[in-house]
Image 1 (cartoon, rainbow, N blue to C red):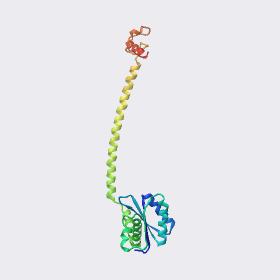
Image 2 (image 1 turned 180 degrees about the horizontal axis):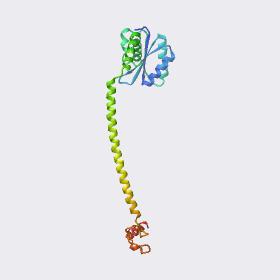
Image 3 (image 1 turned 60 degrees about the vertical axis):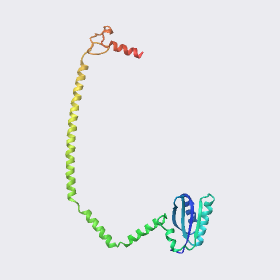
Image 4 (image 1 turned 180 degrees about the vertical axis):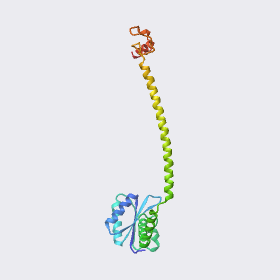
Length: 219
């Protein structure tokens, strides 16, 4: 473990912890290790490292700023930490340290891969793309042909139904035209079935009672 001093400030809540980390980084030349949640109490521990004087100044500035609001629960500065507490400072629960560690490992993996192997992998990938699979094309053509046949059958059925509906509409229109073309003698109901002649009394109209009831309702 490095001989840099370790500073920790425990705040009430994550928002106060983020503010404490910001104050520490702005007040002194230190490095942010990360933060860790204290289980079961809602506390956040911010961890920093650097020279002893810089760490003390950063922790003091954050404590003074957040102490007025009552957000600081505890603070600690360890000038020369022992190698045995490395697992307590940097572990899986420390947010920020793990992401930095993963980025470094990914960069090392990229550097370890030789350029010749990369070229071989690229050439193999391009060869696989250039070789078309005839069996897949044949199967897709058969499926498309079957789908076209099903679509044509559906279209023929739809056309037959449309023709039948058009014939029915023509028959209905002919019947209605024949009914309307019949002459009527009653100028009140204009019903061809009514025997009343124009000029006769209204009581002779077969719809006289219906019209009278409608008039009474309207009134």
